[in-house]
Amino acid sequence: MKAPSFDYVRPGSLPEVFEVLENHREDARILAGGQSLMATLNMRLSAPAILVDINRIGGLSGIDLDGGMLRIGAMARHVEVERSPLVARCAPLISRAIRHIAHPAIRNRGTFGGSIAFADPAAELPACVVALGARLVIEGSRGRRMVAADDFFQGLYRTALSSDEVLVAVEIPVATAEARHGFLELARRHGDYAMIGVAAKARLRSGALSDVRLVYFAAGDRPVLAGRASAALEGGPNSADARRAAMDALDGDLDPPEDLNASAAMRLHLAKVLTRRVLEDLVP
Ligand SMILES: Cc1cc2nc3c(=O)[nH]c(=O)nc-3n(C[C@H](O)[C@H](O)[C@H](O)COP(=O)(O)OP(=O)(O)OC[C@H]3O[C@@H](n4cnc5c(N)ncnc54)[C@H](O)[C@@H]3O)c2cc1C
Image 1: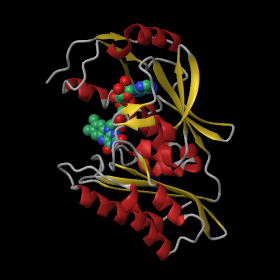
Image 2: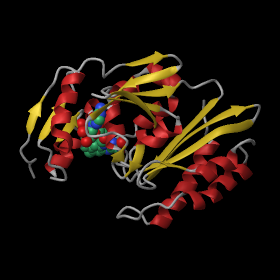
Image 3: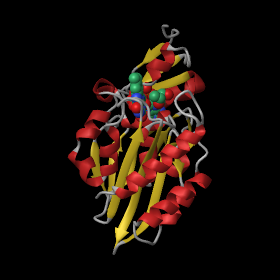
């Protein structure tokens, strides 16, 4: 199928973007890397009247350090993030996860911000930013606001973004020497969306885990922070007993969906298997 017809604008500044978004509201759609949007247009799952291309706007890309936070511009391409030594050092969870996104051609165009804004519940990066306690920098004509990743994802492809706002950057607390991370997913083929996956973050001090955050994707309508399983690991060593308790606690945390790829029971079982493996392999 071909996309329905639409108007196209390529503003040169954010205020111009805000003006178009304000004028067209729900009828406008931001075009970043186009790797999800163009597919939804071509399948006629979406029919915006106007596309607002943000590829020429300065200041939306780049990866840098800013006051103890790693700042990844919304228009940073997946490939830039994947190859960034700064990301590898300051947010190793992101480096590990991003290689699982699709294939090189898609990672060359797709953007960090596009993946977060699209909020596919099976996507890797939304789960990672929740696990890392990131904050999202959002701008619109009413000004700038910060939203915690925990509050950003509000349902299936639904976020805290209003139709007249742009996600401009993601800010991630820089990993400390005590930080431990793990990432695993199961997909039928490498590059496919995951059947189930987990992004894990914890602190290891004097042999005890703390600040544990186990976040699952393809496990609900948004990234799912498993509160009970995370709490089961809190304050003790990363022992086989603690891991078993975390796996058992997942019964109360996850209520995964059923689809052509997997039944709900199979997803829950696989989530437990991934949990054991990811905890056995928590790395700096
Ligand atoms: C074959 C294939 C396989 C894929 N596999 C995976 C995978 O395994 N894992 C995965 O995570 N992704 C996967 N993707 C999606 C890919 O990661 C996309 O790059 C990403 O989801 C969207 O980024 P984008 O820059 O292409 O955004 P676009 O497609 O341009 O936009 C996506 C949506 O987000 C909105 N948007 C984009 N940027 C902003 C912004 N800065 N502010 C506000 N709204 C914004 C757009 O309006 C649109 O609604 C796959 C895509 C394809 C085509």
